[in-house]
Image 1 (cartoon, one colour):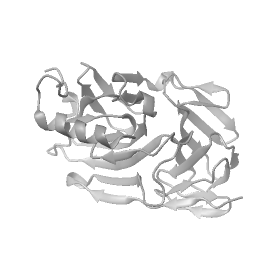
Image 2 (cartoon, rainbow, N blue to C red):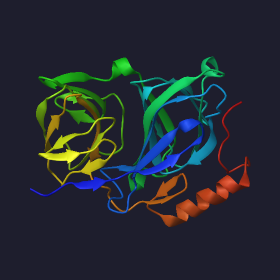
Image 3 (spheres, rainbow, N blue to C red):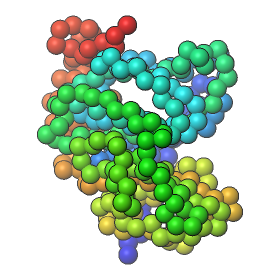
Image 4 (spheres, rainbow, N blue to C red):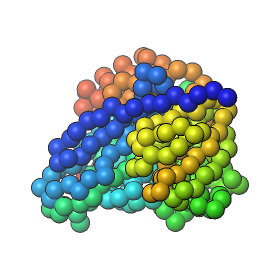
Length: 285
């Protein structure tokens, strides 16, 4: 049995007290399954006067995966999608050859203090799909399967297949994403659900194979291994991510991902051109 790799977050403090913790990519680990990017933001109550909008920006070669614990965001993209993102839902936007999107405060919450807490992940697309047509999927919270895997063990399957359940979210490679809750004092053996697997305690630490795993640090398990989890007196909530290893190394530059460096350069040039024929499409309206 090997030892897990522990990743500490790179923390950025944004206006209004919003803290963002980045776990992937890290020097010690560039990816887990298809996931090449992992950000945890909040929990925080943002002041009424704060503009927390993320304006239009492009992506290629990856899928953005947004999951909220608290708050609400409004997703809009160059396909014409306009979708409210609510807690418990999965929003999977496949950029493929290129897409532009924004994530803004919904109009109903503007001018109000508001809670915000969630995860933003990126999944690399397989090399043959990097230039596929962009698409967007929204899976409401009530469409995602849930299971009590054992006494005190509650899971929601966000993406992929596990324990005889299947998420409605369609992916282009083997991908796993779970929201896992352990009741106080629960001890449970997590099976090796995917070739690569990592655990992220969101707000409370726990014991991992008898060793402490602090909150907001990521444990990347040795390939093909599971782990014995034990929650303390306040219980624990974890994001579990994983899947098949990347088919080949993926490079990141700004909001772009590709196995071919020339595609990154071409995307940067397209974005610099502005809204011209052959460039990125704008968000309608």
